[in-house]
Picture 1 (cartoon, protein in one colour):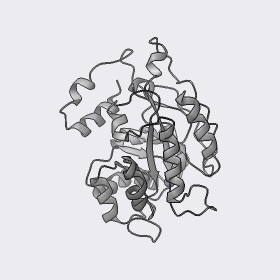
Picture 2 (tube, rainbow, N blue to C red):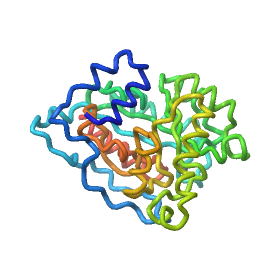
Picture 3 (cartoon, rainbow, N blue to C red):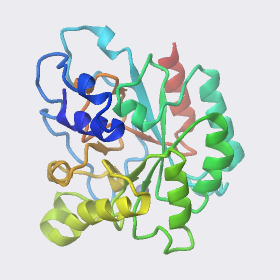
Length: 292
Ligand SMILES: [Zn+2]
């Protein structure tokens, strides 16, 4: 059982139900994070276009395929202007249609906190995340996601919250957090937080991790334990520093499932797909296969 997930559970449940959940190793005590580190994308390369076919998990436990039955796919939206020239932007009507077609396939929408607490059942689970704190996010949450009982997790970078015309303000972020949306960090200035930055500008690298946490916690008035790597870019050194800073989860951009059983996941590099106009048909086709 990973200590990260145990930490997160404790934070979520204030120690009430966590103790029992966090004590039973599943396939021995090997931490989920002790695995070879995958190659990180080069700076400048936002991995929006990805191979969407589900991959076999890194670790093949003796328990067999039943262990992989409870799983979720993390999806990431960005903004809701309804501007067809922006690849990651959708209108409210388009977002509604997307969610309704997922629901029609039998998908449920557990929150990131459900996932962290191991509350995943079956294969048809979508965890909704929204990155970058765009000014259109609050009304999309109110008018599209909440209407369907979905509490999206919001990954924000504090440099823009309440300071630019394209971002939501502190009050809206606080309101959404209080209404049940998990708020996670997404860098401070949304830099490529990679080994290159670590070597080139150590202070900037640290600020993207530590100052981001501190400021996001001040904005949400809650501990911030989840971090989405800006541009999906990361390095081994990024994951190490994230753990040192006290984050329990790192969210990457790559195909794959997050499993109900923590030992199957690399919690500092959870897979997630960015929804774009181009890849939505492919994502939907993949989710249709997964639903069978
Ligand atoms: Zn971003």
